[in-house]
Length: 231
Image (cartoon, rainbow, N blue to C red; front, side, top):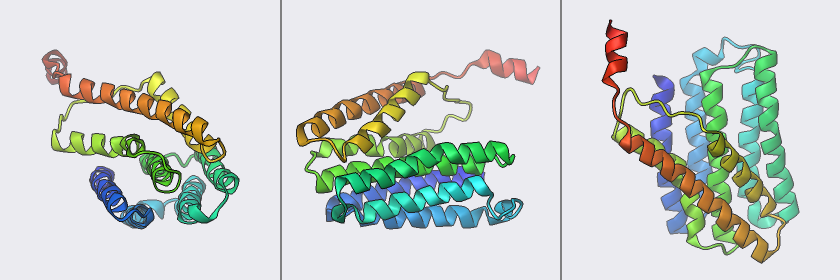
């Protein structure tokens, strides 16, 4: 319940942060609000995290390091070379595999860690899309894939369907991974290649989420399943 409570409000906060970043032409609202929301997330679950040794567990410490790397790299993005920025963010992405390994090795896997990891990924995407918009001259269409995860979360909160369970899709995971790579490569690609690779990646993300929206709003409650549960 605490995770769902935080996740819904985090999505709202990140949409607000994106609006403020767009209006002020600054990436700071995203970094400040995002880091503040994650700090609250950790504080909200401090009693649960106390059960791990060390506090929070090795995997969550790695995820926290990823969060710090993403925020630090994007804070100094306008002062770093494309290669330096790309290397810092690549390190953050590669650490994503490390936290999963540590969670399994030390038996520290948790729903908290799962959401912590996913939302750091989402912050990476949001921050990078704004980086390209603010500092690399990519048009505002790059902001659509940046906020679609948060918009989808808020949509499912407002138009709640209690029994809806989103199915894992291999193509969605492939598209997300491809977009991650495109966002990283964009830091070193030439202008035209950066533009078109980001455009293709953005279109794929938009299509993927459009399918998710369609499935959500066309989903019908299966009364037969409910009757089987009741019986």
